[in-house]
Amino acid sequence: MGTFRVEVTVRNLQDPGRTRTLSLLVDTGATYTTLPRDVVEAVGCQPIGKRRVLLANGREEEWPFGAVSLTLEGQELPTVCLIGPNGGPALLGAVTLEEFALSVDPVAKRLIPVRSYLTMLRRSLVILAGFAAALGHSPSVAQQRTPAEIEILSKADALRLFGLTKEQWLQNVRDAVAAGGATQTDRQPSPMVGMSTTTPEGDLLTVRLDYSKGDRRPTFIQVVVGYRPNRAARFTDQMLRDVIMAAQRQMAPEFEVHGSVERIEGGVGVFFAIVDRRQ
Image 1 (spheres, helix red, strand yellow):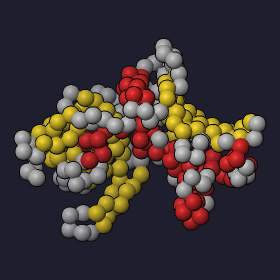
Image 2: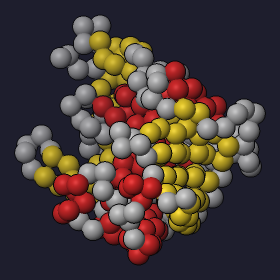
Image 3: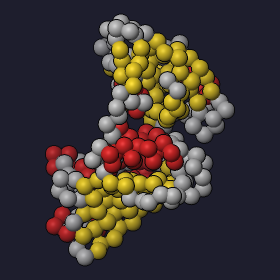
């Protein structure tokens, strides 16, 4: 495929006045967008963790990653980026392209819009998938690791969600509902916007964002996992407490997690409220 570049504007999620415009090489072989350290530092983005990356020469390294707001093809959305060395590669990766519902025309060397199939639903439900794995939706994973060892809530996905305006999130909810992958949980107008999906086992998974303090960014994220009686019986109270404590550790220090458990008519509901400490 012929290579080409696109111009993007990188913006600090918490301080929109700090921006940097640069050219990125479109690289669908790269999972994440990669920005040189000097660009990330110029907009004031702070690393939130590290990821192992496989370089072109076959060597593996551990690079930091963070979240920024990216303006591309007339859209502005939050995305996760790897932070490379100064003067290193500036790449537009596959995850960001999917988030922007863009594909590559290799002949014309341009980006083209494509229909987004539940992109943000998949992103937002990553946290639910981790929780489900911890509590037995994925036996192979659950047998190998205890709930406290599994990443229940992804910082990267929380950063994406906290970077969405109410209209951006509401549109993704509408898209998910239209595609048949979810149901909307709140009638509009309402400060809460959310969606739910049901697993093959019949469990209910819900993500809701609260915009009670304005439409620019959510005040908190609510995650609810509801288990039917035939499945709830396998989860001890101690197991559920361990899951909540693991989430609190894994999301610190950027995010504060409040968790609670309710047993109702034989079933069990696990509730998370995620607050952004950076505000």
